[in-house]
Length: 172
Image (tube, helix red, strand yellow):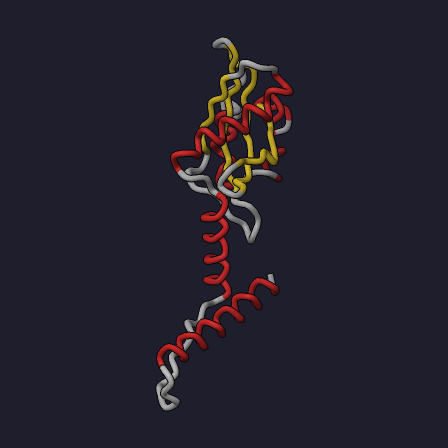
């Protein structure tokens, strides 16, 4: 973090120097422009936005890439011929620090019209070209250990995950 802020400070100094050089245009008495002052939070937001821009696939590629990588993740478990469906639990990526942007989805794995499995998945978007599945919790896993979602998913998503895992339904 300190290295990133130092790099941003250096960039700010270079920006100010370049602005001064352009404004002065060889005139030593020209007024020196001031470099924009950014708070640490503003710097972090800019870094986070740059990570999202650099890693999240284009809208027209997003679904195809996501289905491709979900399928390649689940085929070794469930075999070929899968139909993967997903519902994003949050429309926009979550960006923490300088890691890859994360997406959260509820995934349904089907074959021949039969549901094989369902669950919550956490994915990292990488270089606009792929997704890496970082965590998968099946519906059965969540039902067996509801607290397991707390170490993987943002608290704001707990109600949706619990609902999809049918944890909030009265037991028959």
